[in-house]
Length: 216
Image (tube, rainbow, N blue to C red; front, side, top):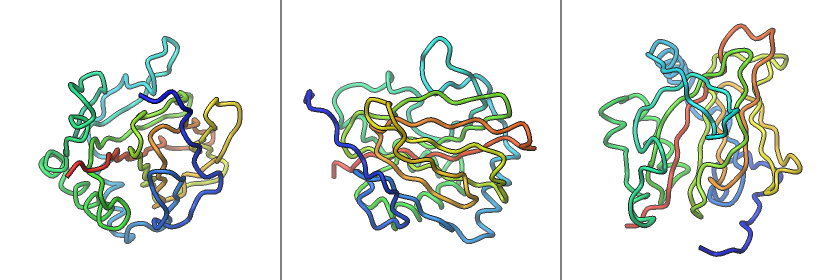
């Protein structure tokens, strides 16, 4: 693996999926028709969640609610070279959550051409719970897409996604969890989910699609 520092993503988020999703921060608003957004929100809020997931393996990392839908749960489970990492879990997602699979198909067609799905899951942070700063993948070209499914969100509720520079000494972007918004960034980028404020009446739910470039 090269010892050269990884390139930094653009500090100004693109508002279109036309940007290179492997190198920049992309924000796409109104990504789904309203009825489909509502279906996904209902699906996520009505399902069975597991408690105990953490953003990283630090001893003091806070635990929160989590739902796994498809793909490898822990990167330590991967075997072999990066080709193994490219295993497409779209069929698994179709079997476990057809609604989310339809969403992924839309994203793959419009934003993630040349990418395959490596994992899909959701996180939920109640008041008093913070995420931990982390990266998702060191492999060039890998991406994370964060979808904000809520029907409504108030500026006083907090819950922004913060994106840092490589040495975590400064903030590159703070992305508001606007309903029906999709945030895409490279897997090597340091980021964190900020907790919600005391005035927020609900958990901060996000749906994640992790992708890698297809080897085909």
